[in-house]
Amino acid sequence: VSRLCGDGEWNYYGRGPSKWHEHFPIAKGQRQSPIDIVTGSAKVDQALSDKPLKISYSNNCCQSVTNTGHSFQVVVDGAGTEISGGPLDSTYKLVQYHAHWGPLGENVGSEHTVDGVSYPAELHLVHWNQKYKDVTEAVDKPDGLAVIGVFFSRGKEHAGFKPISDLFSKVPRKGDKVDINFNYDPACLLPAQRNYWTYLGSLTTPPLFESVTWIVMKDPVEVSSEQLAALRNLLWETPSGEGQMFNNYRPPQPLHGRVVRST
Ligand code: SG5
Ligand code: ZN
Image 1 (tube, helix red, strand yellow):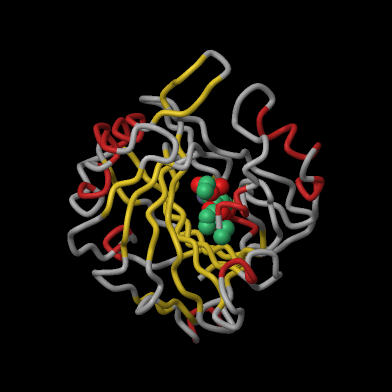
Image 2 (cartoon, protein in one colour):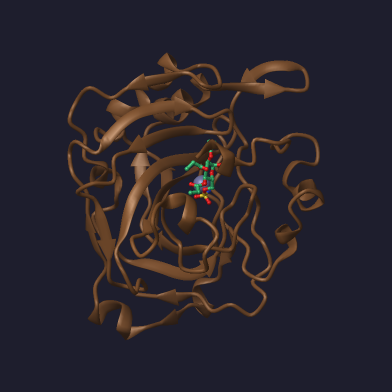
């Protein structure tokens, strides 16, 4: 699957996301992500509540945590995980989750913004449509992926995130990997209230395929300053050598007439 990551040369340095279009012209496409969610323009859609979003994970699906050089990534065995309903026309299985975050102590770092306001981090749970053979086949199809976005706000410690955030110091460098040898249900990372916005968009990293049904939870979950700081135990390569990983987010992209729907 690493082939999908566009191993080639892209990063968040220098002009970063603003030069991705040179190798990935779809960067200037019509359904790119993330976006700024203008809450007053979101269209409340009763259909989303009539067919509620079902999220069902399991406590033995999380296999390992890897430092990918762009984020951490928890690799999931999708068996026994599925989401359906809401904006989705079929069943999708979880394949991995990761996050994007900003500098220490600042309230920027999320990819989506809400009425122009950022959060310090954003978690992405990536799912693929079961009508395809595997995630590799799904990744560039218009209905191939569904990503649930969860904003992290700075507050009290998140007991559910702790077993994961405690592992970051064990995978400091790109390619480092540690097995998860305890039961862990990633549903504990979702907010209690499952209200969301949804729209059609893209991967937020190269290859930027326009294949994602985005489901962005309205309520953030609180994590502590220490848990946000733990993300910076992850290191990446910078032009001036090894450095703490942060600012691994793409800024909002043009809406191009798309409608954001709301529960
Ligand atoms: C990261 O974000 C992940 C991608 C992910 C994109 O670039 O890659 C890494 O962290 C390096 C390996 O994950 C993979 O390609 C492995 C499956 O893309 C996908 O998850 C596509 C299936 C973009 O994800 S995002 O749009 O949710 N931010
Ligand atoms: Zn992401």
